[in-house]
Image 1 (cartoon, rainbow, N blue to C red):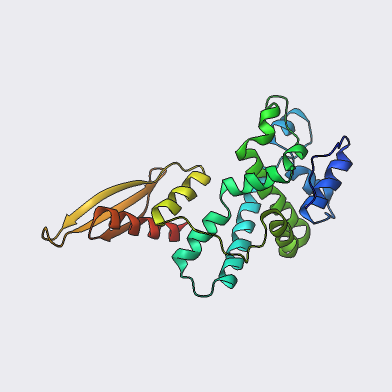
Image 2: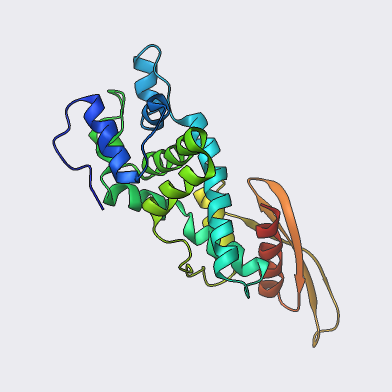
Amino acid sequence: MPSLRKAVSRAEDILRAVEETVGYSFADRSLLQAALTHPSYAAEHAGAQDYERLEFLGDAVLGLIVAEALYQALPESNEGDLTRRKIAAVSGARLSRSAEELGLSDAIALGHGEGAHGRRARSILENVVEALIGAAYLDGGLAAARTVVFRLLGDLATPFEPPRDSKSALQEYTQAHGLGLPEYRVVDSSGPPHDPRFAVEVFVAGRLVARGSGRSKQQAEKAAASAALGAF
C-alpha cells in the first residue's frame, strides 16, 4: 500500500498522493482538501473549509459500513457480540494507527498553533480518517466510502476480536467518543443472602443510559453495560 512519506511540496501533489493511498479519485477535490484541513488552519486562512462537518458524517458512514460487513461475515453472532466487534473495529486507536502507518499525517493542513506534534495527535488522525470517509461518501456514495474504508482499515470481513466483556466494550466506546468513563450505581438489592438480586443503573456523561440486574453487583453491571451498548 502506498505511503505519503515522500517529498510532496505542492498541494496538487499532496491530494494526488492521498487519492493513491485511499484508493479513490475524487471528482470534487474541494471535499478531499477539506477532509485534510484542521480547524486551526481554516481559522488562519480565509475561505478554507475544515474537516469537522465531514468528520461528523464520516463517523456515521463508517459505522454503517463496518456494521454491514460484520453482519454479513458473522451470521451466527448475536447483537451484543456484533456490537462489541464493531466497537473494536472503529476504535480511535485503530483509526489513528492506520492513518499514521499510511503517512496521512504528512498531508494534514495545520495552523501554526498546532505545531509539528499536532500532525500525530491521535484525535486529529482519527478525525481525518472519518472526514476522508465522509468526503468519499459525498463524492461517490457508499461504494466510494467502502473503497476508502477497506483501504484504510483492511478487510472488514475478517472478524475483529471484541473486548473481553460488555463493561470493557462500553468503556472503550465512551472513551473513544469523549464521554469519559461509565458510572455504575446500585439502585436496589433484594432477596435472601443465598439468592440475592441487584439492580444497577449505568450513567454516561451524567446521563442515565440503561439498567441491568443480576445475582451479583458485577453481573448486574455487565447486564447494564450490555443494555447501554444496544442504546448507542
